[in-house]
Length: 300
Image (cartoon, rainbow, N blue to C red):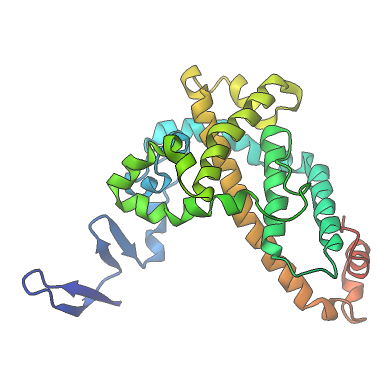
């Protein structure tokens, strides 16, 4: 395999290129690019092999509560402990228990979309961001964040964290930026509305959700179970750390899930004529064909 490497001469600063034979190229002092599928098992090792996470990659998380979550943990054993306490909440069996609630939020989303019919166009991504944020909040804390109940589609959790994503790569490479992020909660009121909103969510709203869950164990869901977990020491149950885990729950389950729903929605809409023809209709379950003809209902 031949790979093209762009080089800068340290003596004269001239930019040139060299053809290198091999699947690995260093793109900067901290990162390698690898083009060899057989090397995948070495990078993503199985459960019997210890792999500490890479600090350079985790610098994306910056600072604050997110920096002490399972996602940002370098040590293999500590990461396994934190991940193990949460893994049961992502099982298929656990998801099926909450299917009814997800369908309720889906119906709320469809009804709200129908109320916008005939009005100005809206960004469907923001609609699904509201849907996924309310579902994840309900799952994690026992109550929705209320984005579907508000009049419009914005603001929502995804619009607030756009600044977090925009700063991710800067945080990875800029140590000064990570140091400055440590004091962001103190400066949030003097910065842009997006930064202010993210800091408010991470340091005020999410801790309130978690505390409400702890005060109501029967409806507390994920974080009530974490506080009662025998696999976590007491030092792992601080409100500061749990706030970071709560933020990650919403961050991971909102934007990415909404994008996938958008793609599925486009695919269904673009091919709806084919699906509704006599040729294809017998191949579809009756609940789905009914929902195509009646957009106010959701398929079972």
